[in-house]
Length: 399
Image: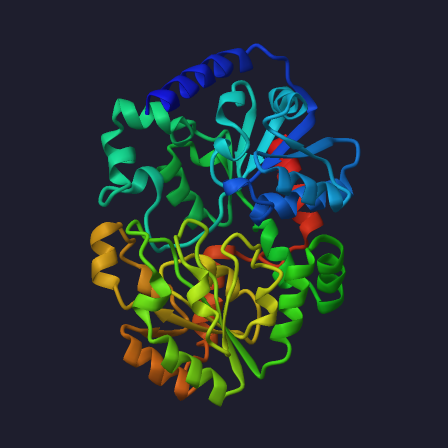
C-alpha cells in the first residue's frame, strides 16, 4: 500500500504539470478499459482514421501487445509508458474513451477535453453517482478521502458524454453529475458493425479483426443455431457459469439441436476457462475479446442485467432470453430503475429449470411490437445511422 501511495503521489505531480502543457486541437487520443482495443472508442477511432486524415489520432494503451496489434492494422498507437505515448497524451486536446480518463491516463488529463463514449445504454442497474446501495456505494456515496485519492478518475467529470436519446441523457446527467446539454444524443459507434450489410461487415472484419475472431465466426457458421450467454459483472466476482446453470444439461440440449452455446464473461469477471473445454457444444470466449463482430453470427442472446440486450435487439430476426435467477439478491446489491422489466421484449426466466424448458421448447421469440417500443426509447428515430454519419455528428456537435 505504501508503494502504491507514492506512485499515486507522483502521479498527482504529473497531473498538475499536465495543465501547463499546451494542447493541440489537431491531436486526439483514444483509449479503452483494461488497455484493450474495443468498444465505442475502437469503432470511432477506426472510422475517424479513415474519414479525417488531417487530424492526428493515436490509440494509447498500457499494454504493449495492444499497441502492436493496432499498429499491425495500419493505425497509430503508442505505449503510455513511453515518452512518445505520455507526451502525445499531454499534447492531445481531445480525449475519447469508453469508461474513465484512466482508459488513457488520468494523471495526463489536465486541460484535455474529455469525451466519455461509455459502454452501454439501458434502464437496468444504476451507475456511478446514482448508486446508493451495494459495494460501489462506498465510492460514490461515502466518497472517502481514500476513494478519492486512489480512484480520481471516478471524480473527474467528463466534458462531454455520448448518449442516445433524451431518456438516456437524463440518467447519465444524474449519474455523472454533468449538465444535460453536455450529453450528445447520437447512436453508438460500436453498433455500426451490427447494422452493416454482410458485405460491409466482412470487409471490416477482414481488415480489422484478428485471426482468432475470424476463426470463431467461421466455427459459428457450422451450427444450426448459436446461443450466446453474456451475464453482467457482479461485485462478488463469483463463477457465474458453473453456479447459475447445469452445464451438462445445457450441453446436451445444444447437441440435440445441433446448436452451440457461446459463454462470454464480462471483462471484470474472474473465471477459470479451462473447466469448460470438456463440453462439445459449449464454447468459452475470451473475456477481453471484442464480441461485437461476432454478435451478428449468433441467433439468441441470453443475458441478465447487461445493457448488451439493447444493442442486440437492433439486429432484425434475433431472439432474447433474460435469465434473472438472482434478481432479488442482485437488486439488494445494486440499485435498479423500477421500469427495468417493462423494457424487455424477450422471454424472462427466473430459474435454471425455466431456462432449460425455454431452450428445449425454443420459446424465446421476440415480441416485435415491444422490440420497436424499446428501440424507440433507447435509440430514437435515427438508430440505424452509418459510422460516417455518427462521426460527423460527434464532430459537429462537440467541436
